[in-house]
Image 1 (cartoon, rainbow, N blue to C red):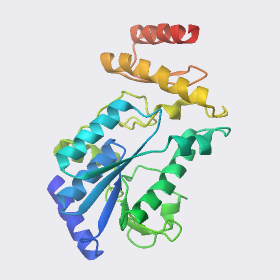
Image 2 (image 1 turned 60 degrees about the vertical axis):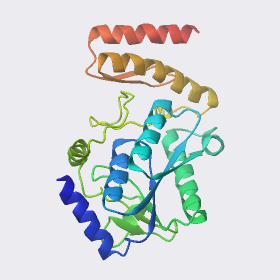
Image 3 (image 1 turned 180 degrees about the vertical axis):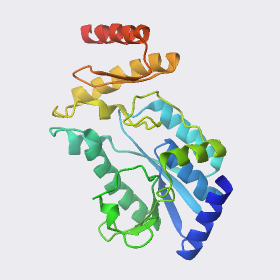
Length: 262
């Protein structure tokens, strides 16, 4: 399946005249973006990676991403968006991800234009919600969207593959991102950053951002040791867990009581 996918990408980029274009992959260090970077590199394209991070990003994931790009031999840019995220999100209602994505896309556009990149690439797969989104407006093959508002074509080589197919491809390519053992929104591995666990009805504040990081980082240690997937919403301290037994839940609740008492 992997060789067929790489061959299909090669054919597609030839048909769309992307072979000699400089491509900038929005690279979070997760499975989808890691696989996208791997496939485009294996297809012989001129690719670089762009990773956004902020004060509350998982350090472990960032370190893994840097090792991965070194192994692939691709140029890797790191951009701190802490100030932009605070400016865009604080004082507004959640989820934080909506505000963060806006900051990232804006920064990606101008970073690409100012550094000579001609294409942006993303790791969206067929299970991602795209109905009604800006990228739904593209005409023709949805793998390549030319949208004037963004100013650069966006390449999505995985958009016709389901999450299950992406898992198979990643396994075959031996692409194994670092896991924080988050609960995530879906049963498939779908991790992000701890800020997504701020309760939606809450007004976003730096104190809540700090709490979301601190609580979920501590919980991730339990999740990793017990091989379950756990996240905690704040400030409600709602526990979300895949496959937790009673003993694990007791340990998590005990930890949360300690955190509340500090």
